[in-house]
Figure 1 (cartoon, rainbow, N blue to C red):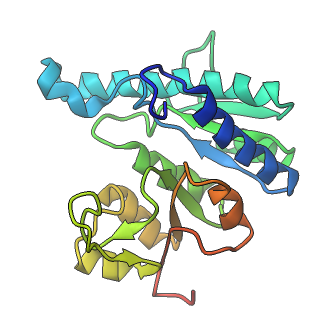
Figure 2 (figure 1 turned 180 degrees about the horizontal axis):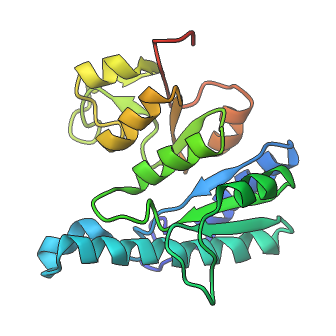
Length: 225
């Protein structure tokens, strides 16, 4: 969406797609868990007079719309992709199957995950943590609008300190809002390290793949970093 009022901002979309294209050309296997905030945010349920569960389902449907669009955008760049949904819409998109997903991934497809976890009251963060673990990812990249994790809100506090690296235990002890707590716990328990970056920073995703410090690296201090 970028700064546009439309669902898809061409410049923002193009920037992200080009990063994905460059990474695929490096031979890196990619899974993308996509949100739906540019269409509908379930968190707005109360102010809209909706039940939270129904609002969350509407948000999941928004991620499916984004996933279908992303598949077409990738096809325009000659990039193969496959969508898997936690919610089945049989005549449009098939349900999630891990064995099929891993096969498609190894065949060079970008795998797109939509529908979150398929359950209300869970954020896309939880969906990302779950899919990263299931696909045996080397790292989970949280591509967001902030260039890392801070000790307090950098928008409100100019003196906010940014962490270059951070352990899961430090994040928990300092009550840092890295991601949804259920997602964070899932990553910690399964040794799924996280890289938080600003997706709008040029080449951010490529730099992470190349091992260039970008954003904040969050690791499990139970094992070696």
